[in-house]
Length: 252
Image (cartoon, rainbow, N blue to C red; front, side):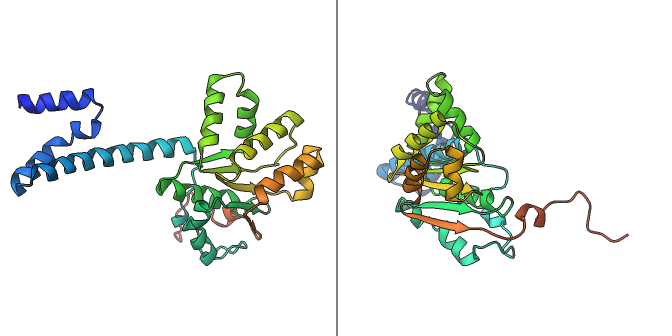
């Protein structure tokens, strides 16, 4: 027992946290199966690697800030909104992400843009990608405050390191010139080394009006629409069609 406690102390010192609570099962298995020293060493390394991978996954999920509805396994396949189940299945394979392709989901409010974007972000996270989900409000706040507060500066660096960045409801409201330029700079720095999923209910002509700058709007769209699949969603509101109820569906 003294040697076991010494092992745990040394593991704690070396920050091998996966082995601190997992060494006993490994010892028990080694004694029963009489594996070689090399096999035992490999099993310890595998235990630590899996522990660290799980911890990183938790961190990525927390940093992503996904909305409540983000699991496409729960998406209603009977909902017709301009994207087929086959197309959605293909998007979920994430081949476009490896190719640094962008997606732009357009259409009226409630047609599932945010749900699909969040769902693909969630799929990316589960597959080990650094993926973030942010509303345009959150992006604007970071751009405005990144030179003022350490928290905003750290968040800006986090955005730049993302392999996938979802920007939800872009161009929902007019952007002042300084913020619009900051948004362009962010996207330009990530251009061709990261992927974006953009959701918007505005067409490109309206972007120029909201930015009050046709040249800036053109430059922004040029970065986003290069290597981009534009998906136009239509139909009734997904939220209204799939809304929850507090009442049981029983006849009185």
